[in-house]
Image (cartoon, rainbow, N blue to C red):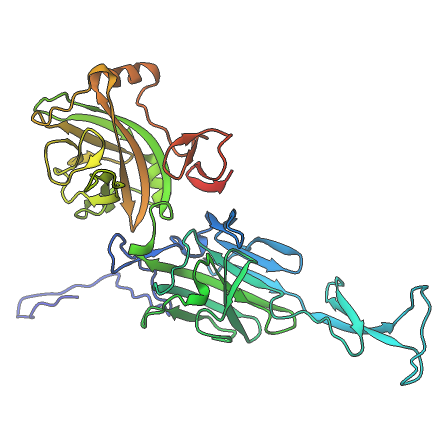
Length: 458
């Protein structure tokens, strides 16, 4: 609050003043696209449960979800409950029972105990719901271990040795317990034990506690955890019935290490008309409702920050003949400045001898963007005989991308497209399939694909 010196004749009136106190810190989204910031793979905290993909121990791709629970009955999506108005992963563990029963021979007959006398007995171990765990002689044990219940967080990002990691979560249980951590290639595909600092790092009480790994002090991925995709919590330290509650805020990795395909939430094909050497750009209004939904945005206010939203994805011109072009992201700093590409779709920096794709300050409303495309008359890029230029654009929010595979074409070609099917825009949710390069593929394609804005293995 600001204050003003009180002088005679001034009257101050206050009405409807309230204060709200909370012992939980607000979730603050971190801006990406900077080597010193982080990409949070739990974009919506515990509510995040996107489809993910990874590589198993044999190098084959697999698909799963962000939160997975392993229990004695197998593995599946972790259960989420609304507790105190907040999404919470909440699951119960079973206790187990040890019983002694006669150790029968192969014919079903009781056997004498030649050492202690009486009948030979054996231990039978059961969950308290009656499900058999195992059995053995009085000298053996088949008790369930601390790995009987495991909660996995899986990301599309392959852990890199020496990179920074952040993990922020809240946890409590009905009975005091402790949590071990591991890393896995994927859920149930063990890689390394104690990878976040050692066993029993997280003492769990009956009250909510917040744990922050790598926030105040850098936490680096160890050599033993590299190439993992999942963080695992061992949740059966208390070998009796219990219930655990988790709320996750963040699992982040350094921005510079997160690849294009790991941060892409949706893709679409888009045709844009280009003026053929004229002085004025051409404009095309594009509906971007799917884009906003995939980025978790309600409007375009996030695009007002300088260079934060529109980026040109293009290949740089090879330095020498035979060199492979490099794929780069180039932020557009002002809406009146676009990114320039040449006739081959290569990014050519601030060189205006090319095609500019950009936005104006008034280019967006609730669900539409007006792209402007301008072909510098001196560039001489001609679209005669059906020539086109292919490049990519993306809209980003907090480091997450929605990518447009753009085909630049003449106004005449564009009019033909309009005459056939309206604006040539393929939405992420229309059932079409793309590979990770953004190319449209069919059902015969094998490998990682994007369909409906989600990655999966076909």
